[in-house]
Length: 176
Image (cartoon, rainbow, N blue to C red; front, side, top):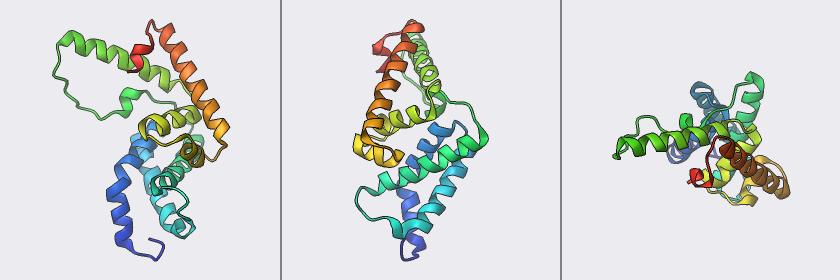
């Protein structure tokens, strides 16, 4: 891509596009804005491909670009937070008894509300560590902040989730 190979950009999109879009969506809470963030991020990656030093994984570099683009877009548009249920793929059919499905939906809604109440920065750390499975050091690189800040944000986010779930009459098992 650094050499101007458009096929490399297509390969990058085919390999990581869906993951990057999901991250943008979880940060912005808006499908159209997430798609715009992804396009802007791919353009930024194309333009900045020469700046990728290869110190870390390419996905960390790309998530960092999406992270910055999404935060800028969210601040510009001042969009509300989202819940987890809105970030998951729609149309998933569960082959379980209705009571189990209702209980799972209630747990998901409680968790989604708790996550949606977090700041964008705290949601980002949760997303990167738990969903994208980045290390804390990679998360710090993506967020552009010190490792200690990532640890603090992660602890704060988990405490806020625990508190919100307890207020909703839920326990830690609802995080599973």
